[in-house]
Image (cartoon, rainbow, N blue to C red):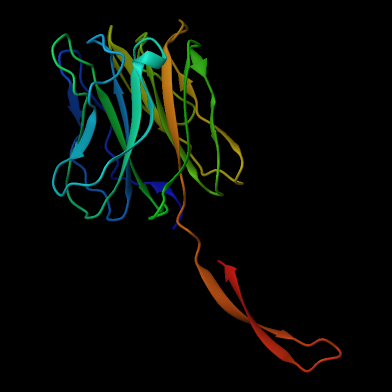
Length: 249
């Protein structure tokens, strides 16, 4: 089964200042799918990093793994992280991103969870990337692909809060005035061949300078199946011989 973003994927969740967590709408992902949580928050408390960020889901708990993370200490103020989890049971659920902060005006959190099917069930994450930029419209090379037919997923937070960002890739954006703007996106098609330079586009609203922190991950496809076929060899000087060869399909 080819890699795909499943129709059960919920829309981006967004809260304004004064809170330290955000929760998606309820959705029901297929069993064995992969949840890719792209998390964004403001640096409203003045800390250089989220104190103790966590991602959790309701119902049967899944194991969440932190991937690439871009913190305020690496730029001026926006936090952007990716967590992943394998769906061990199909269930109606929500996902919550909590920054671990307290006091102040809150983190203006945003959360996009992509539901991916057709991924490698044992080792779904390949290359990762992260970076920063002050340019309004950027298309960085986010990583070099490690396998054929992988899928790029990423996101970027604009601490300048210019408005809802857009992308030439498949996007979902959100904005809180005077706090942060954020966009999550993925490539419309998988990348081929292995070793390709992969880009994602992050376009801040308007034309003013932005303050981007961005992250991205490569989702690897499930390993191809193999079949055994019969071949007949008959060198001119030898009797007929039969051999078997295993080939991918």
